Image (cartoon, rainbow, N blue to C red; front, side):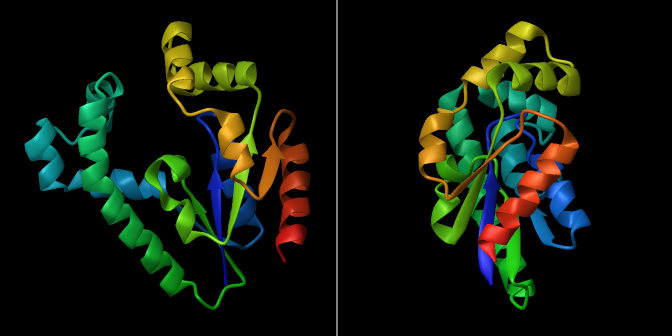
Length: 182
């Protein structure tokens, strides 16, 4: 089995790539969904932050690096465990995909054979983020600018899928990338 990470900065189109892969019959594990599930019943998070609400936590940790690090100390080991369970469960598959938005930041890149980075231009991501999350332009810019440099992440990736066009174009690029993986 080839273990493949899907990553990219916020609003780049990771979810669309996941949908395409699922439609093509591949197994995809989404660490965001996993993190949300872990938060639902995590006593450590509630004790530390007084809440397990994603919206409230996001406001708490966005402006405080120490609190963000503490939240990651709680979540990352649990997410890593779930990734390994996913690999074990799907060991008979040729390819197993895991969507990890914070792949490099979490140090999870070492667990994968190949890394696909989904890239999209800044202004398009800004538009998507404002529309998808109903963020003000100012807050969306803060969110975009808070992430690590895309160029550095691309250099660490095996494949890059540019997502600056239509969904049909994105599907063609995903299929082309799959051919290179197999």
